[in-house]
Length: 504
Image 1 (spheres, rainbow, N blue to C red):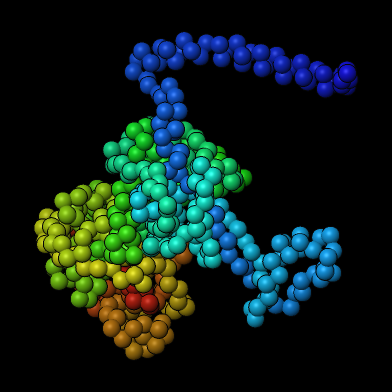
Image 2 (cartoon, one colour; image 1 turned 90 degrees about the vertical axis):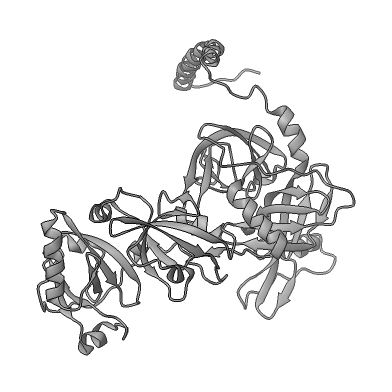
């Protein structure tokens, strides 16, 4: 059979073949190029088959079903008894009616892995089993077990621990150390993408310590190993066959892998899974501070480097931090001998610290280093903020007011606290300081997230209650030749934060 194509199509194909032929010619040089790179120290896995063969039996597919409820008042189609499509309609709609509307079965797929073959314990993502009525675990050999119990789950790290009752010990895998991983190390993902169980993909660690804004303990591994829908909850292995991550999320405009996937590092997962196994819940450490990032302008006012430590915006009453003597304005540099490289690092380290443990906290206060001992408390499960609240994000709004007095900062007018101002801006009775009454939209202050109705509590770490107090504090800062002054600002909601405002 001959295939006839229009001339323009044939010409296009000829061009494509020329281009492809050029590519083939270039690909022919690849082995020698790789050999040269190997001689220079480049090494990649010749084959992952031996590793994958031993690991695949311990990786499982998670299938769930739940009864989804539709809106009231939508009738199901009626099919006569014995009609050819009766079974189809029954299966599709599940024909379950209840007081809250129409019911239908909805299924979802994910991945998981066995961490204890004798006990039948399986790790997966919390979102894979969320709201599920039934959960089944499908094994590589074709067997299937129903999940008898959800041992525990943690929404903050998106991890869950399931239990099945196996008739014989299951294949299992062990956790490795994600801390030892370096960017560029080879990794392998095994999972159930789009329902295709036992799929193996290989890539490298693209980055570490990724913050994807999913929670206060973000510390993801980024990999270019193909991860798709259905891989969630599956393991990410190193080349020794150890689990160094739990695949959780991807960035994709299409729904498929574009080489940007994220996994919860084993350094985080091991601690969470251990607590779920022992207690059925997470028991995180608690310090009791609200913190914020040390930006470039704030760093200049404090005399420290940018992104050094965590700036304490406020200390909760009766918290471990207050009892230890930590104060507002302190910069926490180390916690339990672990260096705090950025604000995000502190919540993770505190959360993983055993409750009741006394740990040293190194901090910077008024330019001097101090070390205090803190007995770590327990974070309440309903406390979603932990030590992760970034006070920079507060942006209370209030109505405009006329200028009452100069503040010593261009574009900012303040007034001493009065009952009229408390009522006007809805300020708490405990608020003390100077009320912001006007901000010039074209000024540098307007770009610093300060709003009319906010209260300036401190200027350059000195409490202020009168305009004279503020002018005096700013005058001292100007004498030091610093370009900005550090203000401690309280919103109408009572949230405190530090803001560095330019003086010129």
